[in-house]
Structure formats: C-alpha cells, structure tokens
Length: 369
Image (cartoon, rainbow, N blue to C red; front, side, top):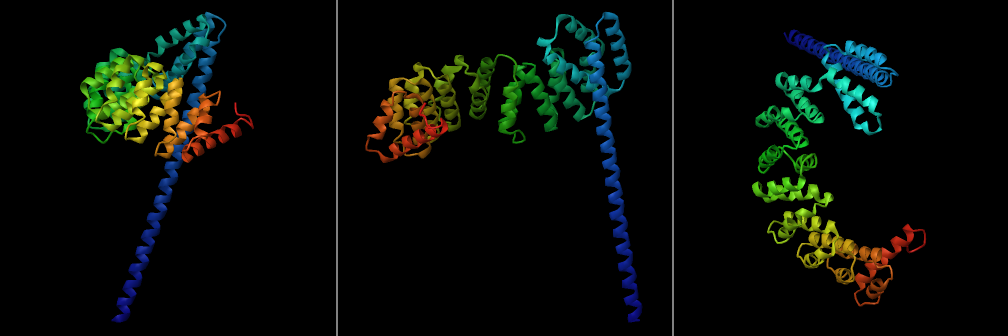
C-alpha cells in the first residue's frame, strides 16, 4: 500500500515537472515570436522612413515642374491609404518646414503642393475623432505641429477624458496652439490632482506659443499659489519685465515657494531699479531667497550692490557666503571689495573669497582675469 502511494507521488511530481517545462518552452516561443514581430515592425518602419525620405528629396530637388509632378505622383502612389506611411510623410514634412528659411522660394512652392496633396490636418483630425486613446493623443500633438487652430474645440473635448495621458497630450497640444483658456483649465485640474507633476506643468507653460505675460496674469487671477509659482519659474528665463509688478508683489507672499520664484525672476533682470528689492531679500530668513538675491546683485553689479555682497559673505549659510564671494570676485575688477573682505575680521568670509579667487585663477590657467 505504501509503495503504491509512493509511486503515485512520483508520477504526480513527474507530470508537474513536465507541465512546468511545457509552459516554460511555450513562454520562450511566445517571447521569440514577439521579438521577431517587433524586429520586423522596426525594419518596416525604417524602410518606410527611407523610402519617403528619398522620394521627398527627389520631389524637392527635381529640376523642372513636370519632373516634380512625376515625383509627387510616385510618392503619393507609394503612400496610398496606408496610415503609417501618411504619418511618416507628415512627420518628414514638418522636418522640412523647420528648415524652410534655407529653402529657395521655388522649392517652398513645391512644399505647398506636397502639403495640399498630403492634407495632414484632415488625416489627423479623423484619427482624433475615430482613433483609440493612444491615437487620439498622438493626433492632438501632430495637429499642434501643423498649427491646426480649427481643431481646438475638438482637442478641448479630450480634457474631460478619464485617461490622464490623453488629457496631458491634449493640454500640451492646446498650449502649443496658444489656447490660454484651456491652459488655465488644465492648470486648475493640477491644483489638487497628483496625477500631474510639477514637471508636467513646466512643460505645459513652456510649450505655450501665445502671449506668455498675459497667460501668467490669467493664471494669477484663477489659480492657487502653487500654480502661480510654477508659471513664474517656467518663464523666468524669458525675462518678461512686464511681469515685474507681479514679481515685486510676490516678494511679500506668505507662500515660500512663490516668494522664492518671484525673487529669482526679479533677480534675472539684473537692473539697478530692483537693487533695493534684492537688498531686502538678502535679509530674508529663508537662505534660498538670500541666495537668489545674491545672484540678482551680481547681475546688477553697482557699488552699492557690491557693498551688499560683502555683507552676504558673512551669512550664516555656507551656500550664500560662497555665492556672494564668487559674485564679488567675478565683478570686482579692481579688487577693492575683495581686499575689503580679505582684510576684515570675519575668517569665514575671507576663506570664501580666497576659495573663489583660487578657483578662478585655476580656471584661467594661472591668471585672475
């Protein structure tokens, strides 16, 4: 009886092992098939890309009108009704237009003819209406590439979708199309929706192709401090001086993030009329704000700005002291203020300036300037 039971367990173990091996082999075969299909798809895409590229080049650089028509007809026959080929042709068309400044007028006329025949807006508009979520996301971005402002309403409808990726792509497309209303609407969604990160908002604002100063004003009217601060950060490199009053107002904000953003934005201007604001910010309890003020004072570079920077070399925070020392070394060409710090009683301030001097001398191959 015991032998029979033992024999049964051995058979069961063997069956399970064989079943496991069969499943393992099946999974391996399936992965191999998927890999081959993926490889075939990549090769097919490369072939389509190359064919359309050469056909477009032949069309663009045909010497006569009749030869251009022949090449265009050949290209359109190759594309046919294949959506993948149409998409690739549209992508390459955008790439051609991006270097339109280098294309002679007669070749631009050829591009107009190609655009009429491809009709990419109608193609992507159809995919926007009938495609799945991925296709709709892609179509929205491509319509923005072609500045299809007549499709704004259709893209706007996607902002109410439950799929976060689709909503994000629709919002990005609308930002590229300078639809301020939709950008503000999406920004409002982001106030409490953690599906969209700070980076997403920065991308959204930086993609905006309209009047950025006016957009910031709209955001200030409708959104919370988090959105305001993100908008200020996004456009700080643009130096939008018409927003200076908003930045100055932000210096007294109770929201630390917004205050930091406004100090950095105002510092970016580097103008003497904002020196007093930078000097006040230099005494803020938040060291990041003091650090931003140092940057602004360095850009301003006046005698009084240098005096303030000398005081900043005595800051309790190392990063502020170090930045102030570097700023003094960078703008004090006569070394008057450098000497003032070195001959002072504050050892930490002197060390910071010495370190900044050594670094600059090393960077300049043994010379100070």
